[in-house]
Amino acid sequence: MDNQQCHQVFPLEAFEQAATPFYYYDLKMLKATLQEIKHFATAAGYVVHYAVKANGNARILSEIARAGLGADLVSGGEMRAAIKAGFSAESMAYSGVGKTDWEIRLGLEHGIGCFNVESLPELEVINLMAGEMGTTAPVAIRVNPDIDAHTHRYITTGTAANKFGIGIEALQSVVERALQLPNIRLRGLHFHIGSQITEMVPYEMLCDTVNQLLDDYARRGIEFEMINVGGGLGIDYGQPDAHIMPDFESYFNTFKRINLRRGQQLHFELGRSVVAQCGTLIGRVVYVKQSRDKKFAIMDAGMTDLIRPALYEAHHLIQNLTSPSTDLETYDVVGPVCESSDVFAHDCPLHVTRRGDLIAIRSAGAYGESMASTYNMRSMPGIMFSD
Ligand code: LLP
Image (cartoon, rainbow, N blue to C red; front, side):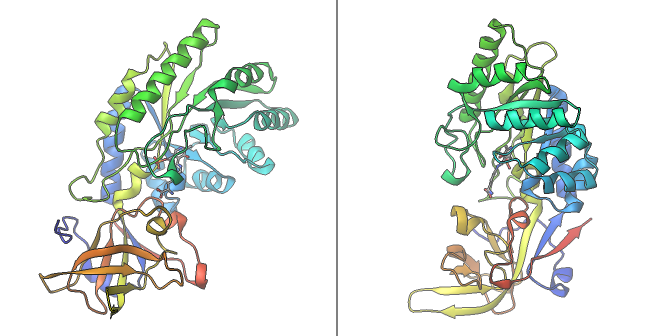
């Protein structure tokens, strides 16, 4: 595959002036993606929350809030950022196995739409705190459906070996407890089976599990107002220009398999599929170094700016934006951080690369900036937006 097929148009003049490394966000692409999501989700009557953890950049958040998506949160910090960006509290769903007292209190103070509860002790604490505050907490119970999403083991969440959710065997007792507790309003069930899921089969299995649970509970006279099936829809990291958007139509259609009861709402929590393709990490080559066996393109961007390759062995398409050559050479593209895992790609075909060339690491809008760190006392990456 020619690594240089770059259909996205980058503003190279602006790039040349800017200090590298930085994230470049194409807001037009983000808006187009949001329109596509709304088109298919609204037609089906679905409610979509955006998983803030994928990218909490203030400008991106306000674009997504303006498009009318809700927010899916995993910390008090994300809650504050979402409120500031203009998401309504009622549109917020809050997951996480370790919600602390101040975070629960913050959610109750703001009147968030739903706590996705991951354990019995958490349910009891939320009930207590809501009682102290003279309020009622809206809650969904997060179910661990024991479905293997066949994605990287670090981003599989819905198997019995994972810390997330409550196993089906324990679910009934937690649902009963939630119905008894005076300061809890049980709204529904929540699921999330993993991330970067590119096949629909795990989602079909999830739908079957949901149907079975809905039948079981209906027989016991329990009806839920909503079902939240989480997120996880994958994107094309190999050929971003060929699939600038995932197939939202097929994705949402898959969930028509769920036999929703009258008035029951289906909720989603999409992160990566909303923001990944609109973001690119731009860096410069500092040195080209030839060792006995390899040629290294050493960049000023590193694992502190984008940790996905180092942490998950993730593949991102890499392109040399300024090489005048049409010849391809093979490089290990690496960062400057003092870790052997600070490698963006091994044996990566690039047009002949020189010191000073601008390099694009594509599909970096999700879990890029939001996972950046200052390890090695490096600066955080810069940000540039297109309008
Ligand atoms: N809902 C819950 C409860 C989640 O835990 C997650 C992601 C999402 C929704 C959104 O999933 P998405 O649509 O973005 O796949 N840092 C990893 C991904 C971690 C995902 C964590 N949970 C990566 O860079 O691949």
